[in-house]
Amino acid sequence: MTRQTKAGLICAALALCLIGYFTLRPIPEQAAAVAETSPWCIVRCGDLGLLDIILNILLFLPLGIGLGLLRGTRAAVAIGFLCSVAIELTQLFLIAGRDASLRDVITNTLGSGLGALLVTLWRPILLCQAHTARRLATIAGIGWLVVLAGTSFAAQPSLPQSTWYGQWAPELGQFDTFPGTVRDVHLAKIFLPAGILANGSEVRDTLLTQRYRLQASAVVEGSTEHEAPIFSIFDDQQQEILVLAQAGHTIHFRTRTRAADLELRSPSFRLEGFPTEPGTPVEITILRDGPSLSLSIDNSQGQGRWTSRTTVGSGWAMLLPWEYAFGPEASLGSLLWLGGMLIPAGYWAGRCGAGRAMPLLLLAMIAAGLLLVPRMFGMAVSPWSEWVGSIAGAATGMFVGRAT
Image (cartoon, rainbow, N blue to C red; front, side, top):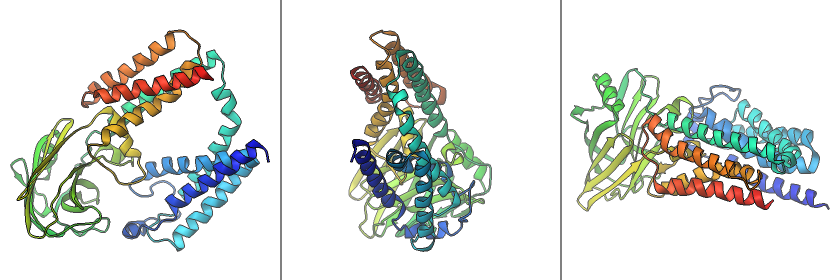
């Protein structure tokens, strides 16, 4: 058995395990939402359509690489297609809460084909000459800037001019139900009732200012396994506008952003320390001040508070395959996201030789991404950790590029 065959078998086996883990687990809480989607859907398939396309392609990419090493491009595409069909049929008839669709078959097959194509192109891409490496480094650096600008654009609020409905501890199929009683909800001086919001335009204008205080008081009666809205706003098109929810011992908060328009995840924020003892009165305050968001909890046991700032490095949360709410650890994710995306640019810059032109160009791009892009979209100034992560990613790539 050759080394290529061994590598292909290992890659394909690991890819199949990964695919099985992400596609064959039941998600019964999503059964009601999945029932509304046709298995023949190609274009508008749920609220996270673009995210599903991206993840499907990435999920089957390693399988395509492994099959490409074993059998070649055509066989990789054919086997990837058959695996996808088998998975979608299993999801459709045997596994609760899984969203099977024709689009998944198409995107999974595309991922297999791209993986097999990489097998044939890896030498000219990774072992390119200096003039080609210079172009690839420039393209990769510009791509990094485009991703930062795109995710910063997607993080901006997007609040439709439609009829809005306030909901106190609603019973919604995609959420748990809040085990308690809501006493009062105010946005600045605006009372938010349960039912149609007659002052919906005023509420919308207040949220769009990005400087507001949302306060809710409730009596807690227990814990929850998943998100359970204490207060939420949906419109007459069933679009989520705002959610303030209990999730176990935490609270989650989010408002609709352009990410939802692009069928990606709108960022959520969380605060630990939510009480779960029955009969505990609690006051929740959300204070938005531009890119800064403060969450606080007041109850008989004391007060908890956490402040988050939306930066250009926050875009990774829009692309996760699972629900996530920003917490204190989010800065590590931003560091890895920014640095990881710059490794290819640094690699090709390292293959350009010992000149200073490409390192200086990469530094200029990093400065543009972390200084100019935040100004363009009203984001918070990038903290030192994002500078360290970006420079470390580029430097790591350059080290590997020069070593090879």
